[in-house]
Image 1 (cartoon, rainbow, N blue to C red):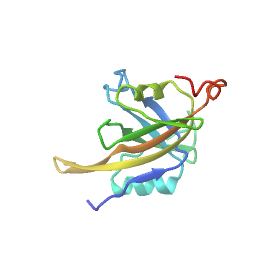
Image 2: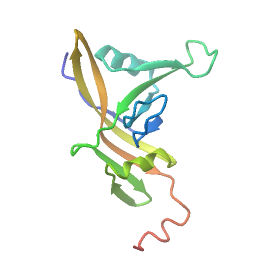
Image 3: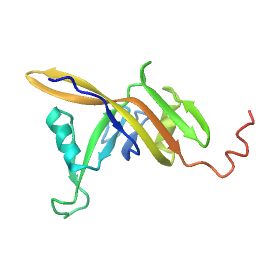
Length: 151
């Protein structure tokens, strides 16, 4: 495989969030989410490089022109991964214990850098997507700024 660069997406739309790593019928208990790739050309280029880009219709019965492409992204909260929560003018680095709150907040913007992990097994190859850094802006509560300076 060729050397593959990080993918950087400003204003990323993330779906199927599981920052807590909770096990359910769709997830074996791993932290992660999917990011929507809104450009068909980009989705095709990523797929050709070996990324695990998924394609699905936007709605049931939709024709081929109404497709959505998603990229599953894993979150490994190691010392190299940074997930920042932005509320108003405050920025907080999340850790393994606090990142789960992203499952329930109203995300208004997400800037995301995805790190590739190139793998090979039994003659097959591919690229798994991991969060490198992530800046998540959430909808601010009406009173958050008023009480921001209190301990």
